[in-house]
Image (cartoon, rainbow, N blue to C red):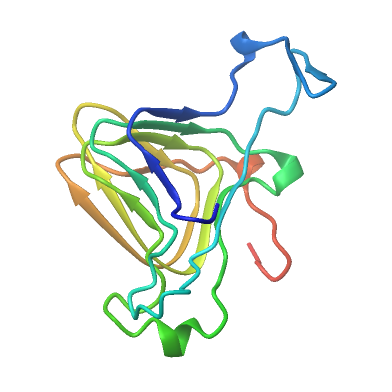
Length: 166
């Protein structure tokens, strides 16, 4: 995602088995199809800012995000690219990029990995709905809000990336 990032104020989810069959672009997905998704984000810093958050993935306090991993996409749901030269460019605290920004009150279930080795992620929690992630690879992770962030280990959803060792 580029050009301003993604701001979720409603619902963002992958297809569910109940949605099938569905056809489009000459393809038909049937029950049993791989419905996983990967969202790739670039933290580009074309404006010269020292806080590198140009293309964020933000989730408002009343939003819901449900993402299912896919073997086709290496079981990674969110991939925040590492910006070249970020160590010398992203000098405003928090050092590094700041792409993943989920507000307290957002409901999210991200079963696959969230991969942002240079990203300072902020994940808000709430006591009214589930906030669950698979594996998180981040420079820093700040958790805030009134609930718990549940990390759900599932061996079949482990990410595999060249250079990433389990």
